[in-house]
Amino acid sequence: MFTLGDIAMSKKQHYFIAGIEEKQKPGPLRIYNFPLNGEFWEVEAHSAEVRRVRVAPTDKHVFSVGADGCLIVYELRGQQANQKVKKKISA
Image (cartoon, rainbow, N blue to C red):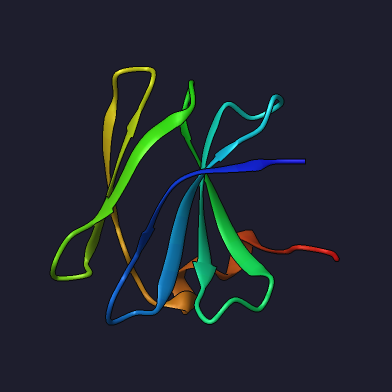
């Protein structure tokens, strides 16, 4: 079971981005397609919980800040670049 932390939405690329709080994984970031269809990409981001997630106005970058004190900048790319880490939530 997991809890959604801070969330953000990209405007042009239709992504829903959330920091996830799980006991086994302290600071992953998940990128969901929007509208939600259960598929997501997960990035092991921080060694502690994700505190803030923001999307740049250009929709090209995502910023996350964790309780570990790190600021991480990600580049948003099309779905093709991330196919290998695609997962699906089971209901």
